[in-house]
Amino acid sequence: MKSKLEDVAHLANVSKTTVSRVLNNRGYISEKTRVKVYQAMQELNYHPNILARQLYQQKTNIIGLLFPMVSNPFFGELIEELEKGLYRKGYKVIIGNSLNDPQKEKDYLNQLLTKQIDGLIVGTHNNGIKEYQYKNLPIVSIERTVSKEIPVIECDNYNGGILATNFLYEAGCRNIIHTTGRSNIDMPSNLRDKAYTDTMMSFGLTPCSYPIYFDMNDEEKKKHFKEMFIKYPNLDGIFAGNDVEAAIIMKVAQKLGKKIPEDIKIIGFDGTKLCRNLMPNLPTVVQPIELMASNAITTLEKRLNGEEIDLKTTFPVKLYDGHTYK
Image 1 (cartoon, rainbow, N blue to C red):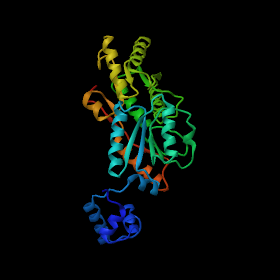
Image 2 (cartoon, rainbow, N blue to C red; image 1 turned 135 degrees about the vertical axis):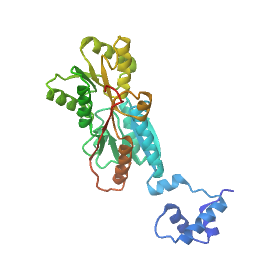
Image 3 (cartoon, rainbow, N blue to C red; image 1 turned 60 degrees about the horizontal axis):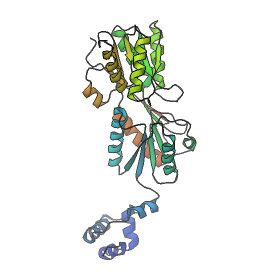
Image 4 (spheres, rainbow, N blue to C red; image 1 turned 120 degrees about the vertical axis):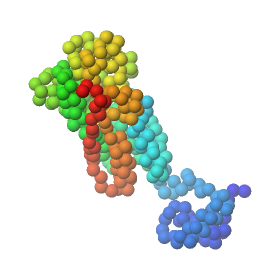
């Protein structure tokens, strides 16, 4: 027969209220009483009803992670760090891929609004979702501005753009293109393109931002990169939107008979461990993924506890030169 809470109370010689307070960590309980209750639970093989406790506490200990795709190395490593950090704090996570699916994003927001999850950490690319406008939502955004009310964790995208453009210039490039994303979506990463443009103009060079959308598949990107090489035959440097795009560009360039880095020099952005291991010679701008994940969790917990938070936190980036172009 399955043991009940009153069985634990009887064996520990305490009231049911005391057992409940021990289980919910509520009010003062002496260490001696706490030990007696847990020993009784162990002896009776008693397991509390987690769902009932969650309903009582109005807390699920579940956090939703909503990002465009886990297959992208940047989001994959970010989600891994978030999951590890949240697990250490007693949370479970549910993960959603939301690329091109605003309805899925709304579904996760509705789970939050109906108390099925405690909070959300998001980095999605969908636009115009009104649910984000509600005040005091336990949501933290990484590298995306979703509303004035929701805190954003980001890297120093502007300085990253300067580092990348300077690196190519110092390597001798003068016809430099930046492959950038959608300018109509409010993303902190838009500052990379602004930095590229400002830096090129400071050198007396003409900037050229070439739109490559994140939601394009690899074949579409290959087609656009091929067209880019045809349209700009004199280009000698490319500041890619991310490391995955940099890898695709390298393949397209080599198929067109161009040598890297002799003919064209390429630098990426993100600097994930995976990409640096697989492409150690690719220069890139490294985002501090572990720090960003850790701060996102801390910020979300403060939000859940009603504490004051910064609505914007920016972390420095660093250049990884790939030991090339020297």
